[in-house]
Image (tube, rainbow, N blue to C red; front, top):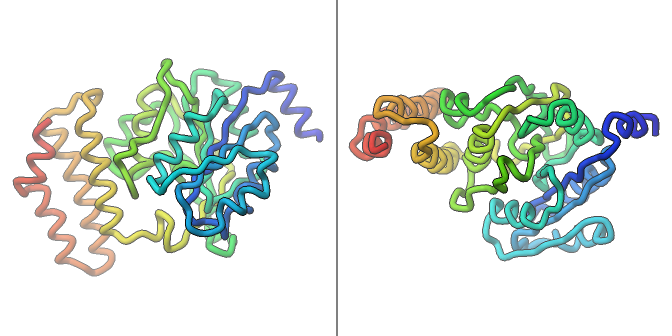
Length: 298
């Protein structure tokens, strides 16, 4: 109670925060996820659960909370479509997304909204997070370290997200410069979060809470559990999307270096796994006619 009274004093008119929970076949984790959002110390929340055509009992689990959350269902069209449908339904000025296999510390939104209240010009606030296994046991922490204008950092370090942890760590404004922000529905798999945050970061400054406030679960179906080939395919699509963004003022040389950095990162990943032939193939791709054309056509 003391914490809530202090928060109300700091933010006497709490803006509405809409929390979108996209889900596909994560019934096993869903109750923990939804309860972690319902238990937030920040009181002015709406919660929108969007099921992406699950074939397990996810909707049944979510229905246990139907008096406190909105439930949307759709065909299996991908997580970005689910996120976007939640954002369209959202009434709040701010959007937070909690992937249904992740969960939050109970004061996550409160701590992030305090930063927005102190600096209304921010477009996004994210946080450090706990690496968590399938049994909800901590296996480490990842620190948030980047703040300010981050758009250029995405290009300097392709696919290495300055905003750590993906969507489950972030809180952002629904409308930036009067434009409603949405995920690219053509991207499916790795790279979709990187692309989304890259585009948002062009509109203003980002900040972070150094305390870990999210639990990001690592398992076979999660981002961290995907094979390198899947990681490459998804991020290559996001890289090509960035190369079409004229806000960066691409030149032939800058585009070439951008692709080179991406392929070199993949090569190093395969070197660590002892697959030198695969590593070499990624370096060759930079100089192949197809990759060179993709990089230089801008």
